[in-house]
Image 1 (spheres, helix red, strand yellow):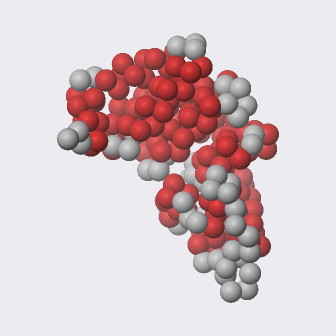
Image 2 (image 1 turned 60 degrees about the vertical axis):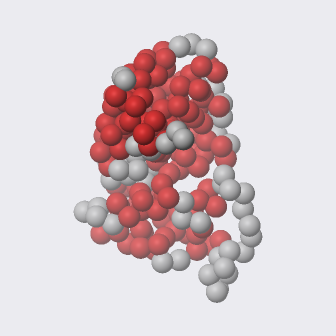
Length: 195
């Protein structure tokens, strides 16, 4: 039986990641989407991330230039979310923060949630980070009743669901922010985690 972890290692060892990543320059949107989805699936392996990280800048450009709310844009955001679970590659995404803010304000739920999660990063401007955290804390506070039970059920792809259900990428980003040097950032993270 084919074992996924072994398959990821085989693909990497046969230089498959650079072959797949090289297809990002293809101009056909469907091809680009498939490439981003393949890299996203392969990025679950830490050793693969070390090789995939060379494509982060190109993926960011692809996300910024793709049509708003398109499948290509969503696939790119998913890959960036997976690649940003550890703080190893955040610096490569820093220049794309304005684009993520734009997607957060103009996109639909499909692109807003991954963009929202990417904002919670140690390298983001402190004022923007504090505002995003305060927004998330206030939103989460007002989504629950006095007993801490969610007032309304939200769709799985929504920002509300991400906040209430503590999705893995969001929870990991919050945990990393507990080590932020700024006291106000840490206070806002604690507010989110304790509500």
